[in-house]
Image (cartoon, rainbow, N blue to C red; front, side):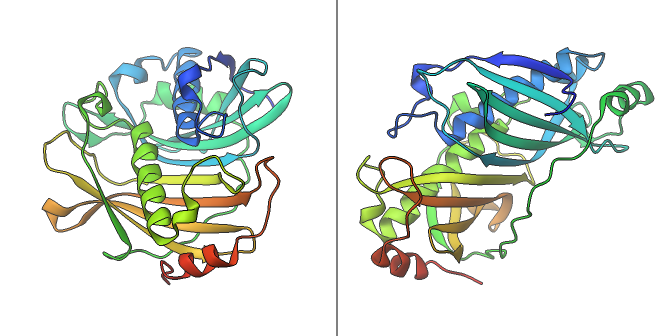
Length: 284
């Protein structure tokens, strides 16, 4: 990344690893959160950490595995797209001199006393504008709205999912979408189970848009998951987190690109049986 505002080391924990032996894709969102905190601490807007800023959306591109045994993971983080009531953070996660992930986050100042978005103050905006750089280039992922369609997966919010603002932390949405993705694909094709076998499934891209807060409660929420596109060696999923107690109100939307690889991580074609099974989840 050219001219990052801050560069910091992100600790990798053993428990961050998944069955495939590298850092799980959902943990990358947690690393971004740590990097974003470092960005705010690097300047005069540190009060936004505790005083109120909401994540409105993420775009995450996974370029290579992050490993526990390799060198330290560093995060370059910068700013772009500063508006009257929003700003964006951009990141590169680097290990052993290689970029493992690129990402961006759309952020909005929020007045938690009034429970509504607010405008950046002149002083807040001035610093963001001063350090802002170019926007990262990323191809948009267009998927259809599900409108109640797709595989249904229920989940319950755990007490530990709640952050200091009193609602589900943005990182936990990646977990909910991941659990639903695995449930949907393995129910369609049991051979897609994540058992560490000869065929592996790697997330190449994960976007999340946050539309409404998710609260802690006893009653479950739902994730709807459907296939939006099937390629030669990858497929794209659309997912929506919905509240069945509010008439299916959509709380968040996600888009995931998953790639089929062999045990060594080399891209391979989707098996014919998998392609047929995913076709049954296809929506347009």
